[in-house]
Image (tube, rainbow, N blue to C red; front, side):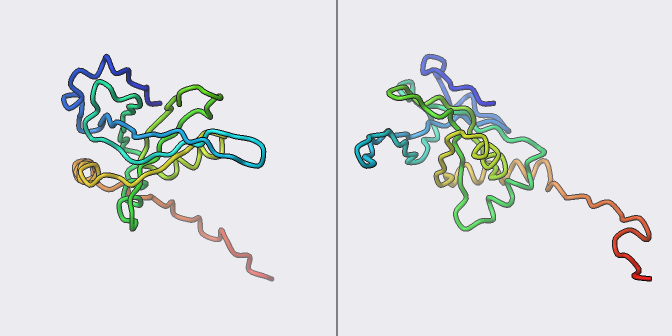
Length: 158
């Protein structure tokens, strides 16, 4: 899980970037939307700032994990690579509570199935290059298929 960093702990966010973790400021905006007689808050993710500042309200750290390299490659090879911000479904007039920032579509879809709010925005080019370097250092994760037993699979129909 990703912790939501308080602005006080971000004295110099550029120094906290590592080979597998990068804190990013999330540009989030609450918007009032009318549906019939009811009004509800809809959150919009407008992108990311690569160097969070002390006044950044929403900061999440993108962590890369070796067992998700296949997901990262799939995302990076798409037409428009995305980052996925997972947050708890907000209560009325409360700030958004960030749960995780991920580059894996599989992780995001698991959270969507669990009634979390999942927002996506285009992945900044420097983050794409950083992820490519991570995959280059740790290699591609190859799917290993087990050999089938002889006779398993089709019935002979006798």
